[in-house]
Image (cartoon, rainbow, N blue to C red; front, side, top):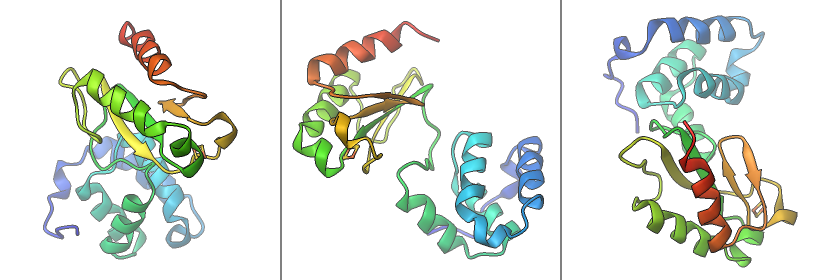
Length: 166
Ligand code: FES
């Protein structure tokens, strides 16, 4: 549930301008909510409640509907994520092939809870629904990169390969 008294002035005005330009270029903004949310996440990095409220007013749909879409799709993030967003697929094929063990190993190694970010701001881990790469199960993505046939051991190796970056 979004509080409609949220302060929209806290949003970065230059980033809002970019989003406005995109929305204003659409023929049917009301029917393009998912595209708008994709663009909003690309511009802002995540979609906090005050940005959801802004979008709902701009596009003229209810804040509850915007929040419902953001909450439904695991792709969207309401909270700021780390430099690297690690998504562990928990769809059926991945789950059956051990995705849960991979997820727990990564959480244990980084000492964080699911959906949270490490203190240094480097990694966020979340579970997601099927990403459509079931032949590679179990699948982990890190930002835009997709990795298949992940085991507990290879998950840690993968983590190490990203630890030295940025
Ligand atoms: S179930 Fe994981 S990619 Fe489909």
